[in-house]
Amino acid sequence: SRFCMRMSKGMVRQMIATATCLLIMSAGTAAVAEICPLPSETLNYTIFNDDDNVGGLELAFNQNKDQATVQVSMKILVRVLLIPAYRFKHSSVEVWSGDRLKSLTAQTSDNGDDFAITMKQVGDHHEVQSGDGLNNHKGTRLTELLWCEDAAISGTIISTLTGNTNDIPIDRIGEELIQHNGQLIPTTHYRFVRKKRTGHFWYDKDGVLVKLTYPTRYFSVASFVLQNKGS
Image 1 (tube, helix red, strand yellow):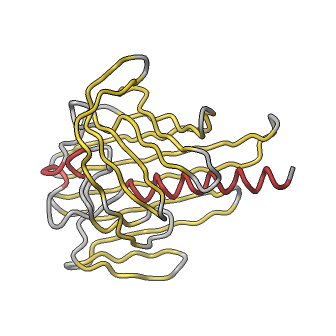
Image 2 (cartoon, helix red, strand yellow; image 1 turned 90 degrees about the vertical axis):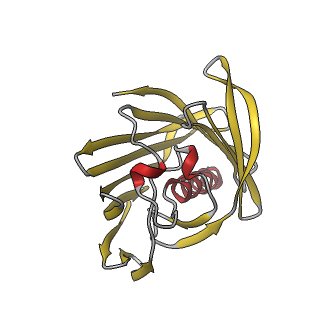
């Protein structure tokens, strides 16, 4: 029904907003490599809406001398009565040089609607060009993605969908054993609050994000679960 399709689209946008808002985070003036050394593996996450597999997220990393590149790719497909009702595709690329983010580009196809943002370093600040126009973020130093535990600190979040900023507090809960891919593993548990809803995420012993959950306004739970590390 049309209602189901609208509801599915709304749930997906909730999931997308959560993931992308948590993907890129400011952290003072720290260097990307100082915060989180780039892994040699590609990180692959499965995206769930409750128990339904609706897509995937891939994070790929490359280090070339003093320049580092972080590539993000996310695809979501929601079906209603086995019929494709909503499609989403997002990709972004960060380019770092030394301790500075030199550029960021992001493209999104939201069920057929395309939009993009670009970000570049200009002096001591970054210029962000999006559908909302040109914005400046003075002193912003983006870390890598929140897949890294050392980047899990409160700060100003810059959305790779819109270029807008938002403050999202993050709290450390503590050590916890969780089930992950059929195994009980030790993790460190954190939580965040966004739009009066509480999300949770867990890092493994290597400081890599293994799971993130967030309740949507449609009473479902969106989850991002690490499936494997591979080149």
